[in-house]
Amino acid sequence: MSLFVEIVIGSVGALILILAARKTGKNKERFIYAAVLAFAALIYLLFALFNNGMDHLKLEAIGFVVFTILAAAGLKSAPILGISWAAHSAWDFGLHSGTDTPFVPSWYPGMCAGFDLFLAGYILITAFRPTVEKN
Image (tube, rainbow, N blue to C red; front, side, top):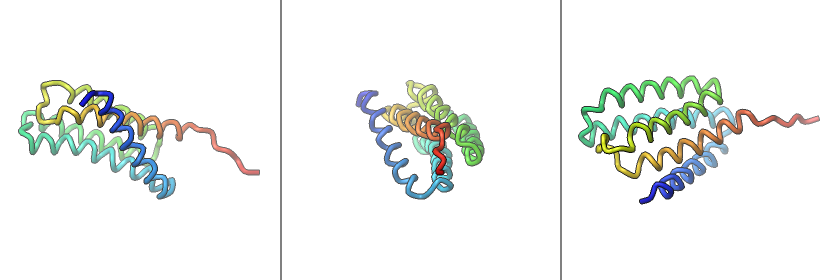
């Protein structure tokens, strides 16, 4: 699968999450994005555990802890949550797209990066969008 297709699939997945999360209301919406961020980091830890990536287990555990802390901070701040999703994209692509992480399916980092960047963009745009006051 080409990187472009992986990114498009990831972006569509993020759009589906956004459409579903928006139906829950603003307070729950941010919680959903934060919970999914922690889960996204957990996926790499699970890949390492179950796909012979034991030599990467410590690094993946650190990533899980860091992104879970960022997700918790994002509950209070949409900009932090959006930046954290963008940072997770760098984690996906920077750490997992080479041959050094054979425990991660080759298509996953591109798809996850597309998901992460689309969602980060949405969160940041909505966080800084001016609100319209009703008279």
